[in-house]
Length: 111
Image 1 (cartoon, rainbow, N blue to C red):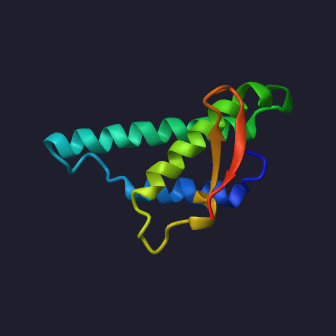
Image 2: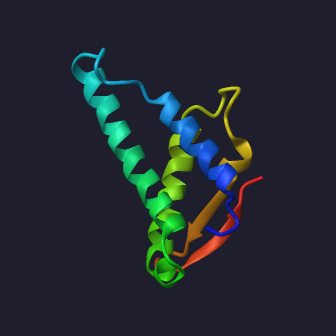
Image 3: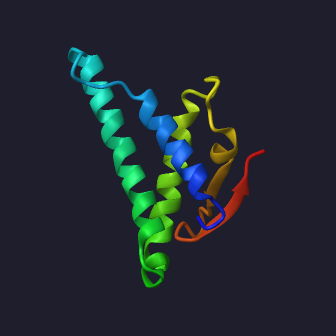
């Protein structure tokens, strides 16, 4: 998570947040879908921000969750990959999880 800059975090979070519609004007299934998407995005955003603002002694405990949350935010952003404001450099920063040892992450650069 250290290689991801504050600017990349802010741009990806801003991009995803701006794409999810407000629920108030929506009805029925569209409203439930937007609410679920907002809840999922907000939880992942909170995990990334928590990790980045945590004291160094907690970093080891929260890095795995933050990496997984970052990957989910990248996946959500990918829904709008063809959007002209898509933050491609931020979205390229992802983490692979080893199936044999899922609690360790390896760096993955998707260029």
